[in-house]
Image (tube, rainbow, N blue to C red; front, side, top):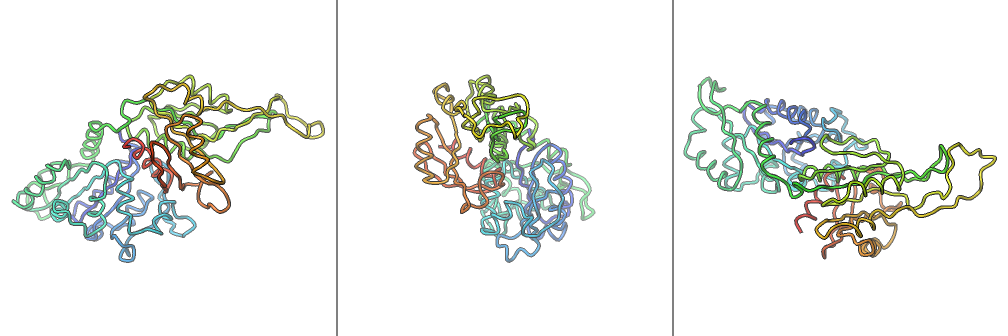
Length: 430
């Protein structure tokens, strides 16, 4: 259940904060991508560097970065278990970090949208009270208000605090709002007392999240999703081919997002070197014809996401040996390749959703809308490419796009994995 999921882990100022480091690793071992947000008092128990090294991501403490002297901005990894690199030089920052450097005060919004689950473990009586009354005086409590995902709280405290009337009232308030509460364990407490208030074992928390996630299917639950990604190669001879610089990053990001939203994902991809989580069925192809035949074979589907950068033309004549330069012709006759998006538009059933991508160098909205109409696509995700459009398009980890369809024209941007999730959430909420 946790493979490929985004988990935001909140850590508050209790002695059990050190156990959160083990929780990060446990989530990662289940295939989840983890980021950590801490309250200022939590940093007195565990330093942000610990969580930065474990996750490979920035750890946030304060809403305003100028006050956040303890926050780290490490480079991130796209793998399920992030890199532990500790470089903080500007040229090695992650796309997320680059994005946040312009809007650091909106991290609570960005992370709230990024997360599939928000887990606060340990969660002190103080933070429970703040959440119950809508207080947002630090990055963690502000992110709780901004989050669009389910929230699991693991109350952890000492002495009689757990049984106090105020704490019980606050927990009751949270439960009425649909927030999940995990019962603390009884045993030896930091004060030397024996009572109720211990953080549950790491394995129990992971199992709880796994169970809750299975009980809350996403908008694509039970739906078959076909995604295309990467370039195609149109061979001229045994060693030369026509292609493009597509890395497949956006297509794979869309496949991962579709899986996190509950879809049964089938990824048809050209030559790429990007890893993707277990649970995604993959089909490697080479040419546009190969990709077309594989999509047709997998059809019908409930959702089609055609993100591949498919070659529009292929050589009319191909040879199986290497053509020597001395005997090569000065021109190559080309013929059109199958138009996969148009075929989908003609053959999908009435309830199926088709999502296409368009990359343009000029008149972005006009060209993209024309493509959507002529190819009978429900949605088009369009972006510009060119020298005046840095950090976007082929091979980049970041993208800025225009989402068109269903009367919607919406600009969206961000790291590709975050952007993919926000795009699908928007499309399936319209």
